[in-house]
Image (cartoon, rainbow, N blue to C red; front, side, top):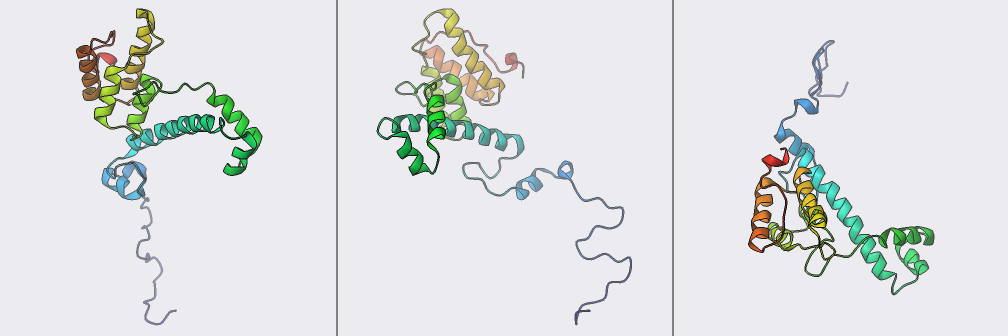
Length: 199
């Protein structure tokens, strides 16, 4: 026994040790404050962001980072050989070749926009890479250069509605985008409220 330490009698629990029959708290027993304390700080995720909101932001940040990586890799390949890129990045030439094949399928954003589609712009907002005012401005101005007919325009509207349903836009942002599109005379067939979207 260590000098100065009181002996522990049989049946007596150590400090911090659960009593017999007492279960340890699980995630279902933790409140929002407990969850906030249990998660270390994550760059780009506000301290008060918990659970699904944090995971959604991280998921779409991962997707956007991948798109940016492939686009930059494609641009880099115009000035460097695949072998030189692979050596500089600590990768193999076949892995660079495979990535460039994927990059070839990814369109660049039109001038004045941060994404190549309505949905990508919304993803950038959710990932914390685009301010709210820039999101509303870009989605309000969006006019797909390859979209001419009303049927093709509906695809753009579907992406906007999908972004709402997937939690990338909240109801207030969604309405702000629709208001701006209306003011700019952009054709739209989208539903007017989030409630009508099935939320």
